[in-house]
Structure formats: C-alpha cells, structure tokens
Length: 358
Image 1 (tube, rainbow, N blue to C red):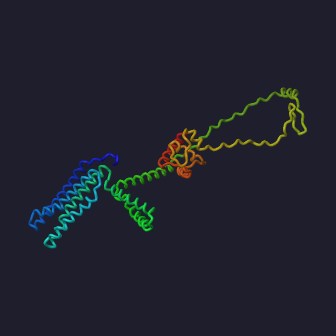
Image 2 (tube, rainbow, N blue to C red):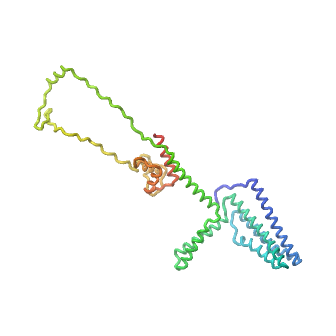
Image 3 (cartoon, rainbow, N blue to C red):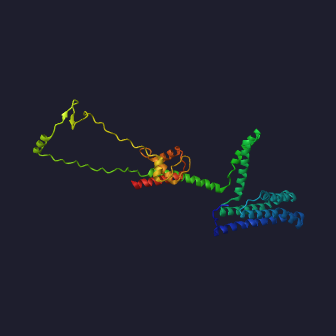
C-alpha cells in the first residue's frame, strides 16, 4: 500500500455519489420484480418464479455485494466474481426467452434480467472509483499489470532459453503483444509519466532562461600603482672638478673594456630579456584540495561539493569561460556522473558566487 495520506470525500461528493447509487439499486429491484412477473404469467406458480429470480437476479446481487466489499477493502476481485456478474444475468435472460409464449414476449423476457446486471456492474465500478480516489491505489489495475508482467517475463525467458526454435519464435511474438498491455488503465502510471515529462520540460526551460539572462562576469584586475621617478641632485661644478681630480681612471684591457679594481669586464653586447616560466594549469585535484572535498572520481556519483568543483574546473579550463551548455557537454564527455537537476543547481550556485565576487 502507498504511504500517501487518504483523501476524504467532500460533503457534495458524498451526496452526489449516494444519489447515483439509489437508482442503481432501484432499477435492479425493478428488474427482479419484472422477471418474477414474467415467469409467473407463464407457469402460474410463485415458487417457480422465485426460483428463477433467485438463480438470476439474486445470485447476481450476491456477487455484486462481494465485488463492492472487496473493492472497499482495496482488494482485487477474483475472476469467478467478474465472470458471474455477466453469466448469471445472461442465463436468466436465456431462461426468460425460452419460456416466453411468443416471439415478442421472448424479447421482453430476455431483456428484463439485464437491469440487475447493469446495476451490479455500476455499483462495483462506483465503489472502485471511490477507493481509488481516496487511497490513490487501483487494486484492479495492479492485478492486471501484475498478470501481464508475469506472462511477459515467462515469454521472454522462453524466447531466450527454450530449446525449440518454434517455441522461441512464438514466445517472442507473444511478448511483443503483451508489451502493449503493460500499464494499460493504470492512472497512477500516467500521472508519474506526466510528472517526469514536466520535470524535464522545467529543466530545459530553466537552462534556456539561465543562458539568456545570465549576467556577464567582470574580470577582477589589480590596481596599478603609479611609479614616482627618483629626483637626483646635480652637484656643483667645483665639486665635479675635485671628484675628477681624485678619481682613478681604470686601465683599458686588450678586449677594449675597462679594468675596474683589477677585474676585467665582459664585452658589452645586446641584453636578452629573461621570461619568467609560465605557471602550470590548476588541476582538478588541486581545486578539490582547496575546497576541502575528495577528488571527484569518474563514473561514480558525486557529492554536491565535488559537483561544484568539477563545474568550476570545466568552466575555467578554457578562455573565455565556458557557458552552461558547454560545461555540461564537457561534464558528460569526461564521464562524470550527476543528475541534470543537481548539475543545474550547482551551476546556479557557481554563478551566484561569481556575481558576488564581481
């Protein structure tokens, strides 16, 4: 049974359903009275007429009450009950047609017992719908689905492993016929399928709107500090002459360079600028270590923190940063596992973090 709480019938629903059940019972009783009158007019004995009514309408009424009781208990009805609801009125109709003195009366005698059959079926269907509405469980649909699935499993196993080629082909064809009947009449299955499609459409619309209305990310640049040139003081001419007098002129070596303090200097030449080495790209494991989460594995379900780390790594793996669709495509191609809804939620968190930083 489902854990979903039961729904109670409103006052208006109770009144309408009760009003609908009254004519069902009334017309069933009228059908029994009509059959009794028809048989009495032929045999002129009330006992015989009562026996015919008991065998037809009476037995049908008993099966109808059994059907309603089982339905109200949330159980499916046995095949004998369902077959008897139509077989017994049919027998009563045949009895009336055979005992009628004329052809016109035979038609009337045959139609009269069908009132009880329709009343019984109507009461059973109404009770079943009430139970399905309140409990959201259709025991009859579940019984049919279980029977079809059981037969389907048998025929698929037979089609795969039976030693006879003809038997395998026959079961293969039969399994395709049974596949069309799986879930037929199951309202709950239809609701679940609608919910799945609604979620997919919502995810697609959300992704499309996120791509259309996402704010551009402004890169953060470091402020430039202006450099103030140093101010030098020009010495007096007299001081310059004294300094020239006291200065010692270094000697000139054979290579054409001056010797300062006894050391020879290398010949002057073009200066090659030194380029600092490029920084290595940040790996996924390093991002995960900074975030404090285990390194995201490939092919296994990821936690929320690992999912955010993977999306951050994929987004900034290229310049300019990847969009949502590009990042999701790279996510799938890399073999990472994550539901579409969780990926979309993590991407929204990443975008919010970027906007706050900007």
